[in-house]
Length: 107
Image (tube, rainbow, N blue to C red; front, side, top):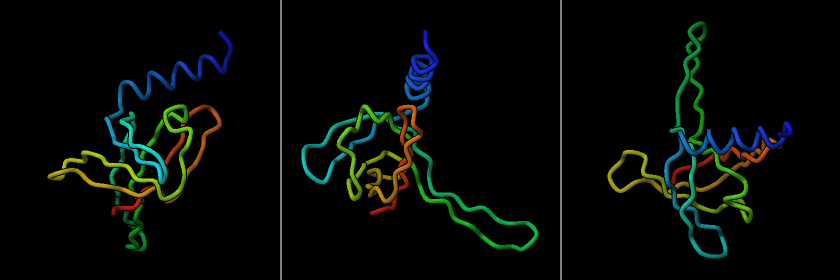
C-alpha cells in the first residue's frame, strides 16, 4: 500500500467513526446527505490578558463527497438545538489528502 492509499484509508476511518449526517445544499443543484465532523463555535480566553477569541463553527468533510463545493452553499446539521441549524460555508481549507475543513456561519 502506498502512503497516499494509507492516508485515504485513514481518512475513511476518521470520517466513518466520528462524523454525523449533514444535509449539504450547493448553490446550484440538489441537496444530498453526507458525513461531516462538526465542531460548534467556541470561545477561548487568554488568561494573561483576558482577551476572548471566538473560533467559528466548522465541519470536516471528504472532498469526494462534495466535488462541487462552493462558497455560500449551506449545510443543515443536527447540532443539538431543536430542529438543527443551517450554516453557510464561508471559508474552505483543503488538506491536500482528501479532506476539507469548512468554516461556517450560522444562518
